[in-house]
Length: 365
Image (cartoon, rainbow, N blue to C red; front, side):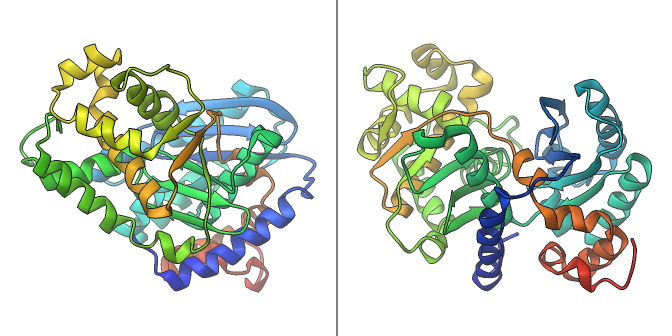
């Protein structure tokens, strides 16, 4: 679901406000659930522990089955993770639904509202569908917390399974173009739908050109949201453990460098494209389940660097989640007390439900 530039600008204002107030939030007892495309991560304001549950949300959504088969596993995880992590039982709880939940909203808003009501009734957790720009604000805040003075760039690049964010203190860009969604888009463009699993390699020069054309088209909104010159630090594993080591091995460089040059990335793509998956796994010393995504990841990172005008990408792997941002987000916890109103607005106005003011609800939940 591509949000209009007008709505993104409104969300950016909200994101900047969030970043300005996150450091001062001091809730006595909160639990937050980061609910992404591949599972749930739980954290609490009073604990450094992180609970994790693996749930594939994207697969059923792409198959047209919605979230139905994952509702019960989600409820079980929301109930079990706080106990397993030793969190206090009487904390306020909120869930943030990110890329997969935004897709579910796009596919069938009415059904999603019913599913969210069922989750809340069974688990006591109000799950909110979080806008892309707000997710970007969470990402920058979390990266700043973890990296501190080591964060030397204006923005961080976080590529997830379903979405990506280029997040900064004053501006952010986000889109539903994470690792799995981008790979799927290339498969739809270049391979037969009947060929499963989809293997992009080997790719011809013409196909590489088509892939680069598609990524330019997909990232056409970057300059609108990030008009100023920026610098970026990539913080997620698809880049730090995938793309960067692959480039180093393809170009016979030292693995473990802290920077990635765009010109070197382009050369590595052209060198790798003709290889099969089997040849890639052997040459780059990577498991086949990761090698499948490697070339598409490289093309995506190259496109992001080109779209932002960044020639050098800094690297700093961290275990980033949206949990710290959610824990500090007073608006999210305000919605817990007006969840019925939130669901009504979600049904009526979609993602803008989160942006609206909980105080304007008539009363209660």
